[in-house]
Length: 303
Image (cartoon, rainbow, N blue to C red; front, side, top):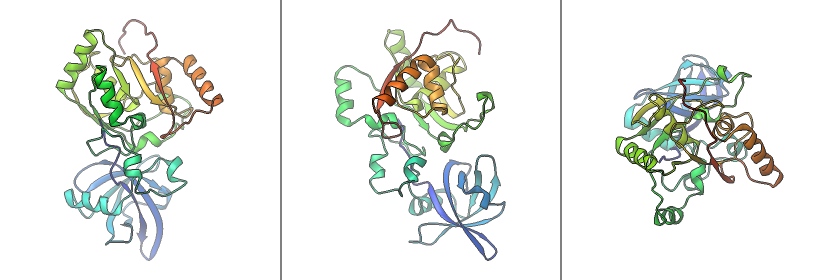
């Protein structure tokens, strides 16, 4: 499965002549050896070709320039360093990019490296933890395997776009940021065989579900997949592979609440969330989990 994130939150100063302004960035997608896409805060302080001095002040600053500006605060940063040297510099200067509802209250702490991380993570690349996986311990995983549950691993590098709220009234106008994922042929073969034998596929987290369904969408059957996906799951979506979903409680009007409503039905999710609110369930990354079963679906139609 996936590693939550490496140290990709950078703070520093914009340099424009003799004027300086504090800025921060969440790097979310590498473009090439020298270039990253990032979400800037505040983006309004930045213009094309602005110089940047980034770092924690403990070592020489990491320098870059603004090479592009997009919507929703996204910018393209071109660094003076590149490749492995840039990777090490980002690790030295950066911090773990926590969700806004955590980061707004405190700075990243050393314990976040383990607390905000799944025990099964292996591959750096995501900017947010697949929070449903935070409930699992090595002991629990071993207990599941002892009961005959087969655990498969997939990779989806959660992007910073997962933090962005819906700002449009019509879901068709919402632009999902692409995320990189991979599921290999051997894993696909085992999952397909399990389904053919009558077993259920249970995705741990919307992250895993999105990748499995993205890898199934082109042909209607799960296939090996490696690349970017901008899959946006809303009510009416036909699920091809996942039978059940473990996930935390998500905010209303978020893309993830739309996903669970598509999966289990809007009516059921309204009842479930009303129960969760009335009984004091915890939301957000360190919140409570749920097991959702897929609602009945109509016969397959062309999408």
